[in-house]
Image 1: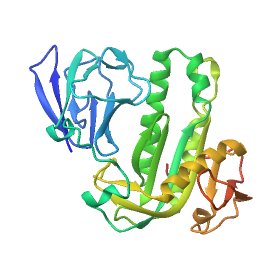
Image 2 (image 1 turned 90 degrees about the horizontal axis):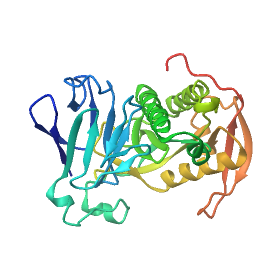
Image 3 (image 1 turned 120 degrees about the vertical axis):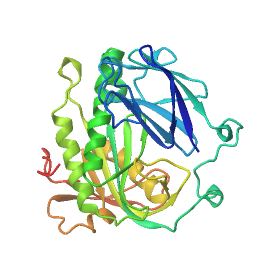
Image 4 (image 1 turned 180 degrees about the vertical axis):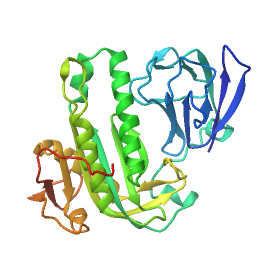
Length: 310
């Protein structure tokens, strides 16, 4: 499905922009909604993404002046309703969904429902989930404006790392991101996924919250088969991934927190690498909702460094 933005600048004529699954908003011309007439807009100010095939979210990208939804500053990804008012700098935009999205016929992203959309056969993929540790506690200590700018900058920089590393961002969920390599017609590869995971860890060590609180993240990596369907949103493709492998990588991210491991990989992922010498075998771990345990590995270096190419 699609949507559109009715843009009402204060210093230019109104115009309308059709958005599909992703739209970026900012001052430079490569953005879907170019606000080059507004010096108060950041170069990469905000982004709109379609989540779950029908639900759009607004994400601030660390802008200096903030992104506002119905006069409330956006901190976490915020769900857009038909008619929502978005304010970026001195420009107001109205979010308008297409008619099929306002009639209550929302398509749920499940394997059972996927028969009503375009579905590809299950294909192998390397999966990555990155989540900020202790975010709820941090959010209570940091003013909302500072938190929005810091979190938005993290979304922008981590997303750029993933894309430069050949990955596709499937979705943002709260302060977490799901990305994949392969899956939807592309060749899967675990090596680039691992390099991006290490680069994300390095990026986190270079970031601090207010009061010098360090930014700590947990990254989980898994390899498995996923089904691609056109009801979701990826950064560059009209597709989303579903399947047990997706559930598994999210469960692994939870286990990484329990074990105190900043980077955790499944045995299935490690088997795809040319060498597992840098990993520590942490044995079998029970995953919530799964009857069989999963063998997991931690990264051998407690201080991880980024690959020179990222």
